[in-house]
Length: 238
Image (cartoon, rainbow, N blue to C red):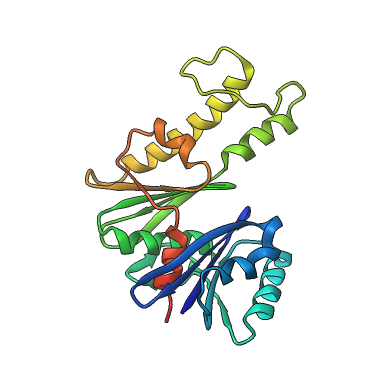
């Protein structure tokens, strides 16, 4: 069996795959990484190969490798990086290897699930908005600070704007609502502008921790795909 790992900024997502699909999937916040061995044991599978898509820092990667070595001493771990082309997707970056591996795997996962033009949106610590055409060409994408990061930047960069919970409104009438609504509108505008650059038959994949906040406000044909990066990792298995 194959262990697929998506090491993000906030969480580690994992999946155990067999020849025909997924055996089990889950996620852990980094502060709970020590529990990974026990969590994987509940899946009642012993993987011999692992593929890692990581944007995490070196300390977290090292801790992850130590835990895997302790629980699976015979496991072969391979760290993935973006390429010029793979699994029907062509990388439009001038230097393909500099594309974030999470974005690359999400694009590959999307291509496996959908052959129409599509927008691949992951709304997490950062928000990425990437475009695929019908031929599988990654034609470019956007990176925004995530919703929480935007609000934190306002609180830290100004003297009188608080970091506080607010509710979205078309016409906000208090500061908290104005901050939340402004950050959401910035995301919605970027996503919808990127989507409207694609042909009319396109669809939009939406995933990430902030997806539930964005979904009700987006006037787009949405597909949910919380495991899109993991799906791409699985597709890249040799």
